[in-house]
Amino acid sequence: MFNVAVVNIKDVIKYLVSIIITLIVVMFLARYFSNINETEKSSKTNILSAIMQNTMLICLDETIPGIKETNKELNVNEDLIEEETILGKLLKVELNMYYFKQEDSIIADTPNNNEQKNNTNVPQKTDVNINEIQTGLQTEIVTPIPLADAYTTVYNNVKIKNETGYEITQEMLNADISINKENMVIFHTHTCESYTSSEQYPYQPTGNYRTTDNNYSVVRVGNELTNYLTQYGYNVIHDVTYHDYPTYTGSYTRSLQTVEGVLSNTPSDIIIDLHRDAIGSNSAYAPTVRIGDDYAAQLMFVIGTNGGGLWHPNWNSNLQFAVKVQEKANEMYPGLFKPIILRNSRYNQHVGKAACIIEVGATGNTLEQCLTSMKYLSKILNEI
Image 1 (cartoon, rainbow, N blue to C red):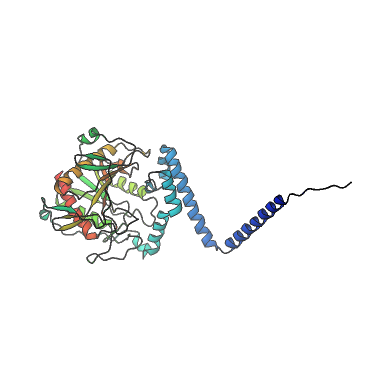
Image 2 (cartoon, helix red, strand yellow; image 1 turned 90 degrees about the vertical axis):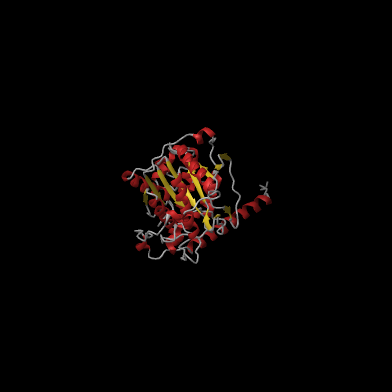
C-alpha cells in the first residue's frame, strides 16, 4: 500500500512567484531606506504628516461644515478650500503640493531671513494728485493673451460668476445698504505677492512671483491706493504685516488676527484685502485695460459666503457693496473690472459690512500698471 500525494503544478508556480515578488520588494525597500539619511527621513515624514493632516481636515470640512471653526484654530489655510470638488482639493494638496513648494521657495530664496521678519521696509509715501485723474476717457480691454470672462448672472451690467449653491436674486442685489465710510482698512493676506519685473520697477523675485521687498510687492499697490484715498480726505489704515511669510499655510488665520486687532482700535465697514490674481497655469497672463493713454491692470472682486459652513452674516452686504462699486466703475471706466467671483470660502469677510478681496492684475502685469489701476479705483470709490 502506497500513499500518493497529488501535487498541482499551477499552485506550486503561484506560490513560488509570490515568494519571489515578496523577496524582491523586501530587498528594494531595504536598499531604498538604507540610502536615506536621518535628515531626509525627517523631511519626508513632516511633508507626509502635513499632507495627511490637511487632507483629513479638508474632508471633514466638506462633510461636517461646522467643524471648520475648530480647524481654523489648528492653522488650517482657507486657501486650500477653493476647489469646486473634494477630488480637486485632494489632488491639489497631495499631488501638486503647491503650497508646500511655495512656502519652501519663499524661505529658501529670501536673503537675510532674520532681518526681514519685522517687515520694516515699508514703501515711502509717493506724490499723487487727485486733480489729475480724468473721467470720460475712452477705454478698451487690451489683454495680450485674454481669457474668457465666465459669468452666471448679470445685474445692471455687472457680471457675477456664482460658484456657490446660492441663487442670486435681483432683490438681494437691489437692497440699499448703509456703509460707514469714516475709516477704511487695507491689508494683504498674501503680502509677498509681486508682479513681472520691468524697466521702471526692476527687482529680483524671491520665489514664484513673490518678494519680501514691499517696494515691489502688492504692498506697494496698497500704499498707492492709500495715498490717493487720503488725498480725498478718507482716514485709511494700511496694514503691511506679513501673513504669508515665513510660512504660507495659515495666511488667512494670521490676517484675521491682524484685522481684528486693527478694528478693535479703528472700527470700519470698508475692509479691503488687496491681492494679485494667483493664476499659476499662465505666468504671462496680464489682464490689461487702456484708459485714455494709461495702461492699467484689470481688477476683480472676490466675495466669500457662508457656503462652506463658516459663520458669515455679512456676505450679502459685501456682495451688494462690490456690485455698487462695479456699477460705478462700468459707468466711468468700463473694462477696469472683471466679473465678480462669488465663492463658498469666507476669506475673513465676516468682519465688515463692506469687506472684500480685490485682486489687482496677475503675474504678467507690471507694477506700474497696477499702480495706475489704484488711481482710477480711488476715483471710483470717492464717487460712490
